[in-house]
Length: 307
Length: 301
Image 1: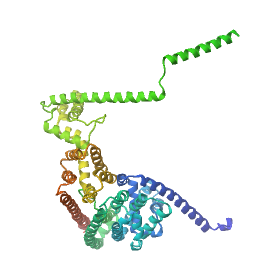
Image 2 (image 1 turned 180 degrees about the vertical axis):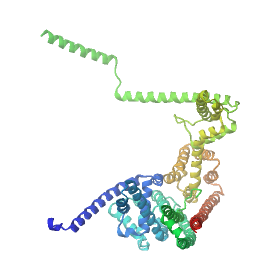
Image 3 (image 1 turned 60 degrees about the vertical axis):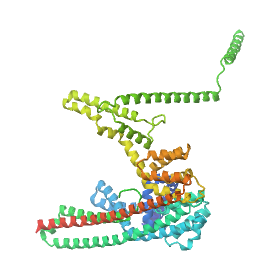
Image 4 (image 1 turned 120 degrees about the vertical axis):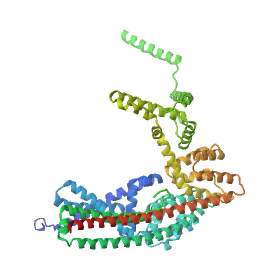
């Protein structure tokens, strides 16, 4: 190509990727601004039931648990990257199968699969992050009498490394962009959703009224965090045991499966369409079961009765 | 020239008539017209409300007259149950007045009668469906019709039960001080933005009743949720505190302890349940896959 036009193909691809990157960043920034305004206007009840908010919070928790925020990846960026990867992989399958229905199905499957994989990987760091969040909340709750912003600034050297950048951003917004205390608390709740919800709601009331004795709410909050940490450590012991049992069972099943495939008729069966379908079903149940176990172990404690 | 003069005379005459008309029939200004429209609208509303009151009285008389007839009548216990439901869910009519048990009874009867008539018409074609005409008047249809009110009441009760600790914590931390500076109204107003919708509805009604006095508001709150022990205890704690009873502070502390213990017990129970559920899932997955592989092995040996 450079022989005809004088431009190398790599330069063209580089320019195209740069343009794509700038366009995507621009549109995600716009989308982010609109979402921020929309979420800020929602009441607590609306946020609990809004699917867009919950999806955004899910992606936010993935980013924080996997420490992707260190690479300045936002929720919109992550969503687009996953969509692009799913699209690229399903395009490959489309090239083989030439079916539009399968293309759409594979895109959805790959999107869900990548999210599920990221969710599983995030579980490795989730407990540590929860402990960091509770530690931060205890620090803020114990110094709330100084005022929320002073409390955040005063404890800056004590925050865990994963929490510090978020706190610096919140203080930066207050000092440079003249954000109010309520906006700062909304941002705090947004960044650490759902662990900071009760703290932020109580802090808003305290900042508005400063009634005598209200600080005791924060002492009760510290106490509740302590109880939840004890529950989490009990759960951690149970989940380690369950995970190791699960892995051992899977290893046994694989070994047994290899033994079964020694028989020529069994091996032939597994190579047939029905055998492939059965294998796919078995893989799906194992993977689905594993994801379900991790999901149940990660559910927050809510005060509604039942499960 | 004559035409011009005639035209001028006609113009002067029309202007004079217009002025005389204005002097005789003085039109209202726009401001007065708006005020009259408002007065008319409020007059119509008052007439409609008084008609609704008359309708309620007639409905009451008619509903009580049907009480002795089986299938269509309702017992006094049922009537009390309906009143409780209406009060708990604040079921209002189109004019903002509270519904009555008689109106609810008649609504159910009218719909049942319509469905019965429809089934009766069907019976002209399919004679075997004739006994079905009585089905709309059974207990099941009544429960289905009033089911929405039951669901709403359950939703509000559950929301209050699940959020009571958070609400009471706000009241407790301020009123445990002997020289509390806030009021019950202030506490409720602070809590309402973070409440769920059903709890917010219940607390907003309590706020509305507080205008008529704390005692009145608390007794209404207690009456509305008479089956909720937290509400009942809260009302007695608040009454004791406002009368500065000697045991008020102890009551508050013990109630706080009870709520806290209940919450801890609930979370511990959830932890156990989840551990058990996860165990079952793992066992089911492993057993299912092993069974499939054994079946494949047995068929292919």
